Length: 289
Image 1 (tube, rainbow, N blue to C red):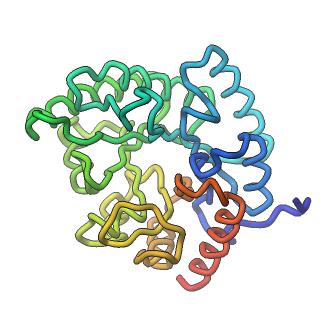
Image 2 (tube, helix red, strand yellow):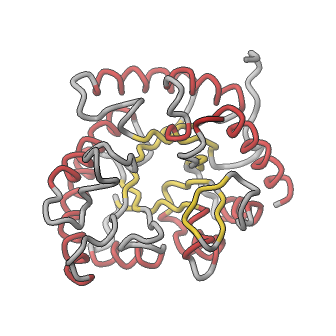
Image 3 (cartoon, one colour):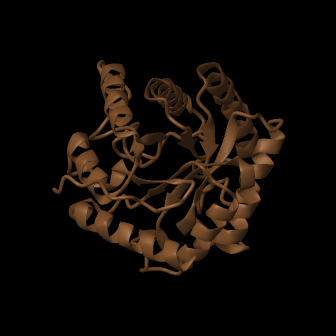
């Protein structure tokens, strides 16, 4: 790797980062070294295998060490909670906040908040999960409001904001759904939004620009990837239908100051190459905005 540190997007108010779920074949220290050389200045840290198990006995110590390294680099960090099989080795993303027995998910999210406090994270990002079999939509919404309310209180006590992410196929699927949920909870200041740019291609009726504008000042976290309208499949930038230049222009117009991190969890086999190509695509789109 070269010793020169390149600039991400000159003049941008937001910070470019990269999701650790796209570097699962690298030790975390090595991933940070690669990304720093490419111009990234932030980390979207997915808790779980292989980088930081929130239930490990030394998790707090590892988080503290990571915080010191990120401080030395001048990096930002958000905590992501989308790890697939951490809580159940046979069922992806289960249990979730809608299930009959959500206790393990709630414990995981409380640990995420605790680690977010140690890391000095911008936020902890989370989502609703899919509707469990046999549970009606109205009941699922009641469960989500009740369980999320307790997590909001925990986040307020810890001083770590939450960022709720709409996900295609989940109970809370669009920015409008997330805003309605927030209103039902009394619009707590500690609860903002995560917007995945690729998701906007799939489910947002007003596209990526409309979704970002609807989130507006509540936007706390941005995930960057491409998608096609037909499937919730994370693609490299330029391989789908996302208007990346319009998305970056909208973030600029909103004066968004948080992290915008590449989210490509199925691309670890070529992580350095994907990260380099993603930075090139971002810089090109920034110039074209």
